[in-house]
Image (spheres, rainbow, N blue to C red):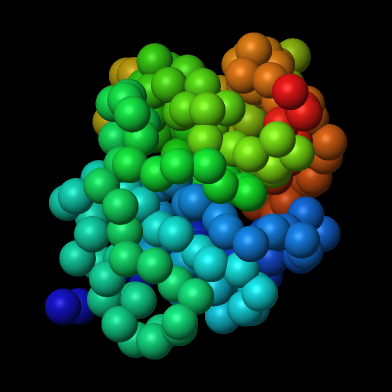
Length: 199
């Protein structure tokens, strides 16, 4: 199987890793939602060897993810689960942490709602959710490039688009999560980090 490749993943993996090191130090297992090409999973599993990295995605993306897993040959990297965020129950029990990159803007809004609600059901108390991607603030784009990107997304799929931080954070609060970091990233992206409040 030919390994799929994303230049964006290659560009952002080191900055994201710096954030994950701060928040995943005491984590034993991470569920990645939307593993995509599999690049992030292979890289983060290698550089965070203390934890188990559980990949997941829609079934049609599994062969590419498995190609990266095969090459990585890391004993802390798990084969992808078939995960549709809108289906219940998710094929995974409680986990210490959840990570997702570049998913919220390509999902329809009901799927974003389902994803964050689902995160609230699988995170253990005190668990951490990291979400990477572009976001708008106060209904405004943070850059001209993000405005252009949003336009191109909506031309391809009118249900997609860059999400408003305030609306995403409101979903997270409804799921019992509290924001603990909003980190600026290269290329006008952010990494948002929430923690599930103890019951």
